[in-house]
Amino acid sequence: MIIASQLKPGMAVRVEGQIYRVLGAESHAGGGQQVGVVKTKLRNALTGTMWEPRFRPDEKLEDLALERRTMQFLYRDPENCHFMNPFTYDQVEVSRAALGPAEKFLKEEMRIPVDFFEGRPIGVVLPPVMEVRVTATGPAVHSQQDSTWKEAVLENQMQVMVPLFIETGETIRVEVETGRYVERVRAEKKRF
Image 1 (spheres, one colour):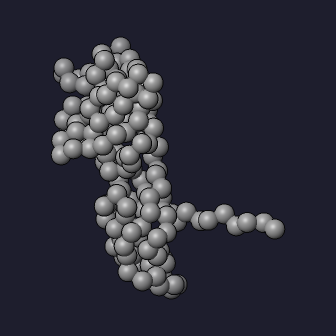
Image 2 (cartoon, rainbow, N blue to C red):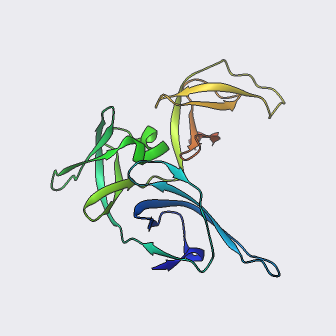
């Protein structure tokens, strides 16, 4: 058991018989007669639905011990993503809905940690920001306006808003959870 004020992103908890991944947790202290509250953002590990419940800071929740295994992403079908253990060649599938936005960032042969609970895969662990190549966007415009954006299509078929100076073929960093542009990846300059 764990109290709500100890929740951290990445943990798994069971609430009302359902397994949830913790995506975010913020503790807010109460004042005077008011009791504090813990605002959480949870994703159902089976259905992928989001839930943002509030808990009392001292409320007890069942935390779940996860087993993490590095697996290789093989392919996706209309409903599931398939992974293989590179040492035993055992294959498992995780529903695309349960993976949420992370599913769009999976590339064939990519090795990533997969979390298991009671022998069943419940999700993957990706960094909060991933690098993705821009495959289509309007022509680059270099202006003094930082607040003007244009649409771009990425190699994973996502559409994001990017600054005007981004060109087709460039690599950018994107937040996995929100799909927002973070920054352009700059090529390292060679020193002679």
